[in-house]
Length: 518
Figure 1 (cartoon, rainbow, N blue to C red):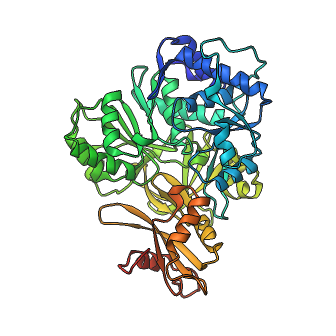
Figure 2: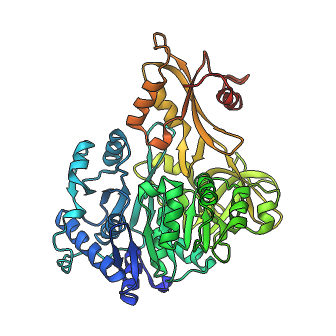
Figure 3: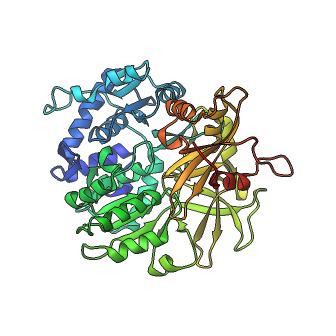
């Protein structure tokens, strides 16, 4: 494994690996396989084209790409050009993508120019598929030396004001994660990591860079496979995946498909869970049924985008899987510290419930073009005012062994199928529709653990009898699919507490009732 301590940036880390293991397989997708040397050359060529297109150090480059080998190539190319990349999922609604491009000031996008035009993105497009000299060396270009403090990516997360916000993460932030977390895993160049998650979800950062840092193989998972648990079970076996990251709600379907497929022999060594509270019973059942030599090690990790993918780590033991703690997330990673504080910012008593405040090298730069929000969520405190914390909005309790139990959110922000969602953003979109007088959104969980996003709506005067299909269609035009409510319930008024605030406990009861929902 390349010495991480020598790398000053992600570019240096990758280039060192390419020099050390040029012939090793770096990247596999449905169409091709690239060695470390070939990936280095392909990203050099694209970086030179970005430079020729006017991309310079400090710019933000949009990546409008489907799941394939072009994503890692484009990420490396953007970083080599001195820019940071901004994921632009081509399946997102055009209105949302246009907002992100405008908010980030993106002038250049890597992707299909025709698709960019269809989405109304008025930017310069560099098509990675038009590299006519695929086997030729990269043309010389005065590419900059990238520093650790330079931004590496900007990932947009849901925003409570109705607009998504971009979180800026530096090379140093990612390198700090790798230096702290990788020693906790027994991984090597022989491993094959699944690049399962969308590059709009920051778990993909860990899947890509942890593999490249160790000289392992990154195996991209096509969207059609990722969306079919049955097909994914087959893919895991065929591709001999050894390290797999999963959001718990997605893993439930995978575990069921694995059993239904008669437990094919797999090569898994690690199962890494993140994004939601774990389902310990599902994990226990999968490990008990596992066919393929030794059962994989199950690891639970927690962390918001603002602290660079992960903040805690816990190997789930047999006692964890059958114990009383519902969501054990372990202890902070070595490069971070976590404190539990009350609403007034004071430390909570031992064993008490508090908001997790995270400090350390993983804490990101803040929000792009949002100084007030950055100042609100990223606070300087501690002895002598020398520590910079990110206030997560997540509640936890410290256990007797010093580790943490995750207890959920303390605001309207939720984790749904791995994505962070501000309910306020969905509610703002609903209230903007002429058929809606008022609206509130909640999540219900069935007895089998399935989660549904439910919109409870007070119809406007003159609204049609059932505006559900119209509302669903409109939200699909402006919000990502994971933020479009699954069900719509129409009520005469929203439930309120005695103080006049929205009663979210009662809202969940209304949403889960058997009354007809559209």
